[in-house]
Image (cartoon, rainbow, N blue to C red; front, top):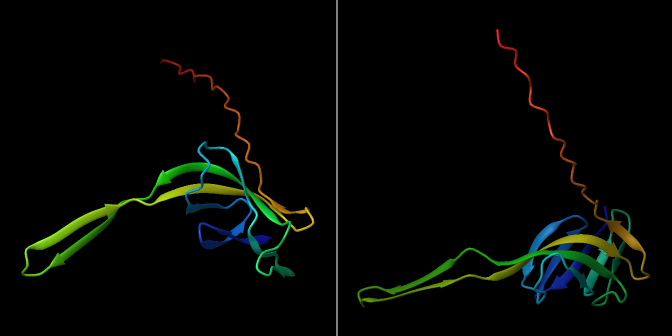
Length: 133
């Protein structure tokens, strides 16, 4: 199974094709748009690995943006005892949820690709006939 180490939002993520993960908010507004990550630090599989210095030129990871949203509220509460001083604050960090589709090597060859999920067709079931006795 091939993987890549990408850098986005000041953080590094080890990703595999078909994986869904939360990253720092991306500037893309609409969901179901393709996003390319070109800062690839390393990629490889079980047998070989290619490491960049610091990045690998020409390698990229293609992903789909699922949604942009906010995390749960983190409460910040500060209190100084016996001073009647307290402060309550909250923060909701924005994030983007992405699904990794393809990992490309530096020469443009596809290392791994996510499986496409096909929705099963819905067949209308006929109502069962019950015999009255």
